[in-house]
Image: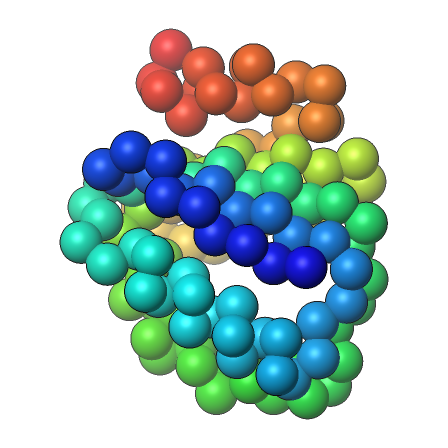
Length: 122
């Protein structure tokens, strides 16, 4: 399951759980691109549920879309990742360190209030 919900003029909330195949990945990336049109200096709240590695076909779709994904990433300044798994939070923060202009911070699901405050710059 992958869903993108606009939450104000410069924010989207993403929920992900399960396993994506190539069709799911294509639909997810299309939805992400469509629902982030017009965003500048954006914020993203990313809720990761029961994570399963995507299929090889899904990974191929993601790699084929990397150029457009880099453009999409530039729309965002901050991303809070809510996940139970510590390794997902750590990898997210490492990813943020590697992407200029994007700060990513991991939180546990019970820290949603702190994630919201951090996204708001408090």
